[in-house]
Length: 396
Image: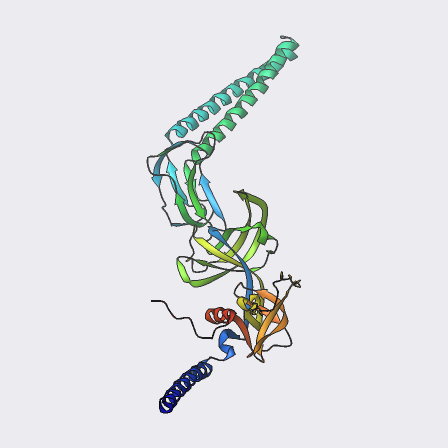
């Protein structure tokens, strides 16, 4: 019986020893394979770089000077001398209207001038004769005054006929449409055979861009950004037609006339653009960035690092309290470095930002230092529950 007890005791001792050995081996393996505390965080190495602060908007490319060519007379288009994209010189003939009606009117006016000249000659002769008769007292003073008045009226009628004739000849010349400037025809709104009517307003025949090597962008900026935009600031922009090209310009004008659409207030900012190769075309959409400030070779950090706050698991004995909001100084932020196994806060001054990277000013950090950007998700989750640092197993 004692032998049986001894055998059972020996058997249980071996079982307990094996269990203890397994438990100790598991915890030893877990401690051995547990990643270091640094693995809980994602780091960023500080470096020197360039940062540019800008505001963005969309705009439309337009010629710097766009001349609208119309006509002061009505008529049918009988000839066209230019077409879209043609280069023209100042004074060059663009189109010709049918002059038949205006020629007839000019001829009628010329005939009226001849009639007025004949009437004037007769009035001069009558006035001269009346003076001779009055000197011999053959007619009264009243008859002489009538002759003088008829002479003046004849001269006025001649002047009126000459003015009408000049007007008709001028209108006759308007049937030849000429270019007022040198440039490129960007729009043609007439065809041969079409009748243009210049009754209340001059119809538009052509649109001529004076010089496509000089262009401008009419862009709309929100009222929140307009206060920081000044004349003379540098502008960079891109267009869909040339996605790999970077274009530059200069702010020429900030127009004070606001536009309100759906309660959104915008202001027109005019940007001048050099286009020596004439690859930019009127009407293109430009994605404009007005550069507000630039810094070269400064210490920069990702904006995510400025937003990072370490998560500390609460102790079991701690009572829940409402967190107090810390007063944050304007232009300052807190970065965290890993030191002695815990995140250490370092207060820095924040300069300009490009919405991705920001300039920082501090004497405690330098290029090459590592700062905490964020915590690994699985590490945060397991530390909060008191578990190990291993990633959670994927459920099947």
